[in-house]
Amino acid sequence: MGTVFLRVFCVFSFVSGSTAFSQSEKAVHWLDFEQLEDSLKVHPKKVFIDFYADWCGPCIRMQKEVFTDPEIAALLNKAYYAVKMNVETKDTISFGNQQFVNERIKKRNPVHQIPLLMARQKNKPFSVPALVFMDADFKATARYFQYLSAEQLLQILLQ
Image (cartoon, rainbow, N blue to C red; front, side, top):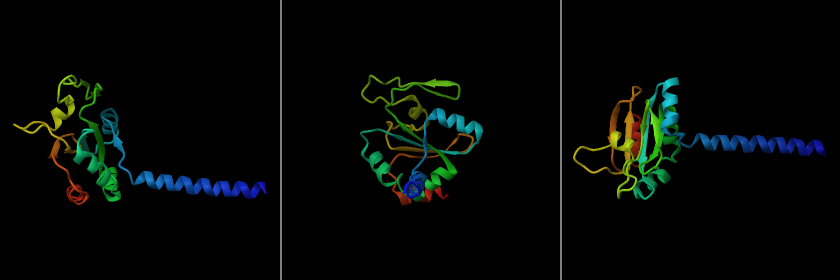
């Protein structure tokens, strides 16, 4: 009886583990900027950055509808380092031997330095969602300041 229980337990554990693994492979593997810096040193690769805010309706919609799409997740995980950053974070972020802070934390629109440096539009106020594509040398190749459907983002990723 103990042997049967052990076999059933082992099979259940294997199936559960396999299911959990396959589900995690369908999710975007988001990094923060510190993890990105370490990753770029080891293996240069293109970078995708999603700048968002908790109150941003289109950002929430992209998180629910676009970044959960298995094809989007697979393409981002394969070809890019994907970074997600809340533009209103209070965190000090170390990147490229520099420290970046949110100097506007006590102001009405408390956007952190990093998104202001990387995703600002000329002669326009900062807005989210802000999606930035960078090459392996960390140079911006494209920026989008709008909701992108899974189909739209897929077309961009396949270019």
